[in-house]
Length: 189
Image 1 (cartoon, helix red, strand yellow):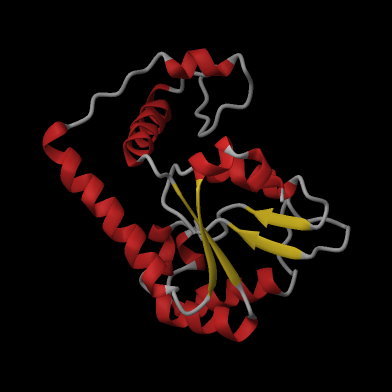
Image 2 (cartoon, one colour; image 1 turned 60 degrees about the vertical axis):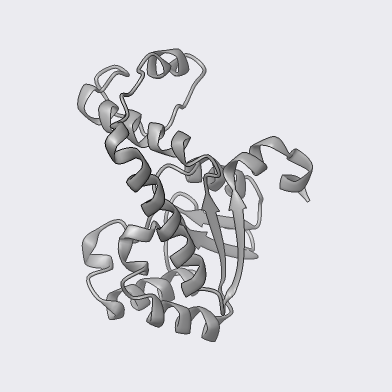
């Protein structure tokens, strides 16, 4: 679980590099999959029962399956039902956040700009996919609204803390993107 732009695409790729892990994308992205608690629980059951087929699905024996779930995709609104489901089914949660919330904000602004400008051959890409794309996207230097900066950062911290609190009775771990990138030994253990 996370907020947008925490490095979850990179983390999903890392998880999927393990032969026995299938980490799906944002399955709760489409609004019909999260319109109410029942639809959320139905989709959770599909993933849990290995009935969810995506490019991440593997023919090998999966020891762990999962997906990205952004905090604005119904999990906060229906957290009580989700917590009950997680506890009943032994689901573990990985919270992935950015320690440097300003970098996350810059990433949000840059991603929003690329949605409009489509800098890479007229297409929008949420993530850099090659070394050649990096300098193109890195040229953009977003302007941060400094009157809104502190309230935005406080809101981010508040939402992060609230999510961790909501799921405090479930099996969970909180990871920070910066720690994963910095410390390969922690990442690979």
